[in-house]
Image (cartoon, rainbow, N blue to C red):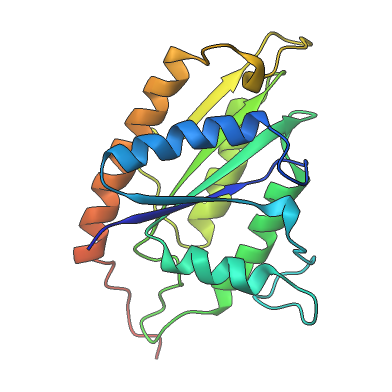
Length: 204
């Protein structure tokens, strides 16, 4: 079966206006698709994702539908801009909602993310890419995702500069190369895990 990747764009921008996060995700998803993987990108700001740590926070919550697509995919790619050296508030909201996986284990103690791969794309005009990776990597691992080597790709412009990644005429060769390696490693790992998921252990 064809592997699938879902990319969650955690830009703060609503609508369809171009964002640097969108550009780096599109480049990464293109690398996944070269490897025969089906990809889709969702801009989380266009949905009403309510605050909370359950999988369904009630009427008006759009997270359950997004969660369903995350669980159905083999690979999750989170894209975030850097704000004040941190992942965006929307990226943190996504992580908060994924926290529900901790209490949704099967009879072998496995969370819904067991056997699924995660990776992260970061973009911004300030230092903080590695910090954002570290925050999101730890959280994703905590809720059951597996991280491949080179699970992060990023672009960071000149400190306190005004150039955005989306405005670069030809992007960044180094970032594209890093995204390509991310995709290859993630697909390799996801292929293995699909045929040999973690065994877990009986909960009783």
